[in-house]
Structures are given as C-alpha cells and as structure tokens.
Length: 277
Image: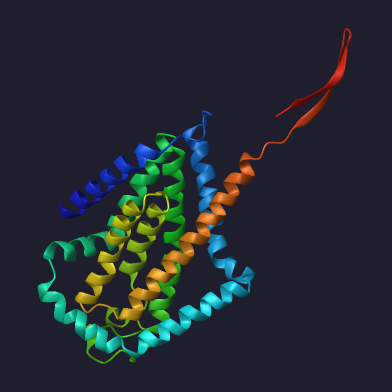
C-alpha cells in the first residue's frame, strides 16, 4: 500500500508541475506503435551511447574524471568515520524520510514511476513526457548494468558486516559484500536528475534533487553503504543521464531537420523552381 501510495503521489506531483509548462512539440498524428518503436530505438541508442561515450572523451572530460577520482579517494579515507556518524543518527531520523528513501530507491517503485511517466507520454502523445521517460529508462538500464557488474566484481563489505571499509571479496555472491556502488542511490538520483532537467525553476529543481538525496542518506543511516558508495552512485547517475540526454537531443534535432526538394515547373507563361519541404 505504501509503495502504491508514494508512487501515485509522486507521479501526480510530477504530472501537475510538468503539464503546466509543457507544450506538445509534435503535432503530427503518429500511431502509438510507431512512436513506441521509435522510442525503443532511442533507448537502445542511449544505452549504447552511455558505454561508448568515454571513447570520445577530450582533455576536459579526463580532467573531470581525475577530479572525481581524487575526491573519491579523499572520501575513501574517511569512510568508516562518516559511516559511524550517520549510523548514530539513525535513531533520530524521521521515520517518514527513511521510508521514502527505501521506496523511492527500490527497483519496483522506480520502474513504476518511470513506466507511468513514459506511458502517459506515449498514449497522450506528449513529447515532453516521452522524452523524460525514455531518458530515465535508458539511463537506468545503463547504470543498472554497471551497478550489477560492480557489486559482484568488487565484493565490497557493507558497514553492517563490521569488518571495515577495506574488506573485499571479489566476485562474491553474498549480499553483505555488495556495497559498491549503492543501487538505491543510483536509481533515485537517476530519476531525480532526469526529471529536474525538464524544469527551469530553481526552486522546483531543488525540491526534486532534495527528494533524490533522501535515498542515499537513508542508506547511510541504515549502515547499508559507505559514503563513497552513495557518492559515486550519484556521480555515475549524473554523468549517464547528461550523456543520454545530449544523445536524445541530438537525435531529435537530426529528425527535425527539414530538407528542401527542388522541382522544375513549367506551365502557361510560367517557368520556375518549386521547393517542397
């Protein structure tokens, strides 16, 4: 019941706010099936772009990567101290925030929200909602695969295991050694960042990002992840969402480019060229 209630409330808030500023860009009456096929291709292209984009990184991109790596290394030193601090705050944390953090970051709730956004956009032929839905789904698939591989490959112990932040069981199948990265943080921030990008109002953006931060913080309270787990999860979400969004925007511009077809016309006292576009 809580899962359905939270999903419904969040979806309604998003619908009300986004609908107020949305303008349907595509006036052509395309069939729902054709739109779905087009979106499926965009999702595949978005995921592919997320994995191949690093091959095209330039100097500035690598400098940003280096800065993130350096910052993460610094946080890594203090993982145990920060974890102790957050765990000690768990008893004082509002129960409502803990529940929101759990439900918003859980896979089933995440896909209910993303499916609701995309489904509305598809059947209402609402360009803004379709774009947002495709962006969330593409980014979630890309980050989800990276998350699954990383959790198993690194096998990092969770704080709740009480063995320290530097204990690893590579290729472990134990859930207690699936700390890196935080799945809840990735899903919640992927959705929040993708949705926030659709608004220009800073207060609205701030509210959406605040909701996205609840899940990462709640996982720290619960002793389920280290600070570096949730931080890198959010950074990964931002990088993937931005990359996919740029790809989708470029594809949209390519499709919308109009070409002019010139034809020679000759008639009674008339000779000329007619451009059709």
